[in-house]
Image 1: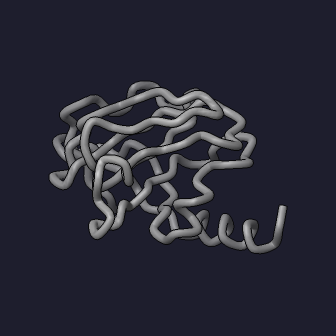
Image 2: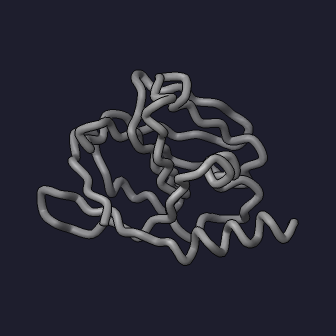
Length: 132
């Protein structure tokens, strides 16, 4: 693995935030943040597993349904995608196996990628989340 990729991953690990279920002020998990082009491009590709779920912040200037799509090329494990709208409400949850592609019903403000083995149905459609 290149030093550039490794440095970006280390930066993400040090830049953790937490995902909360707002209604109960209950912490769901710590999450990595993919908020720039490179981190969104890499996602969880080439990793053996996810140390933490990864939150993608979708730039609003490119906010469209197709821009909210996710691929699982070069993935080594199944993932669960959680799509969150502009009101911080979960509106769609989907499973994605390696080497596939998924387009949600509508554009997302955030997308969270969970390792399918770690998801445990911790979020449901209609849940309001908060990132701290």
